[in-house]
Image 1 (cartoon, helix red, strand yellow):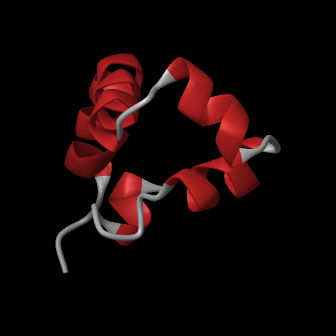
Image 2 (cartoon, one colour):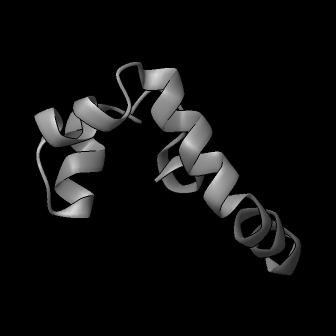
Length: 58
């Protein structure tokens, strides 16, 4: 989601829809949006970085 749409659309609601869960479930585990962002980057940083390097130049 971050790679596709950036930071501003990275909301609890958008992440919940994509993950098939609800905002309250996410909010219990990650009380602040920055907590959710940090957890996302920690888990997916390498695949995101790798995907950017594999994209062909435009």
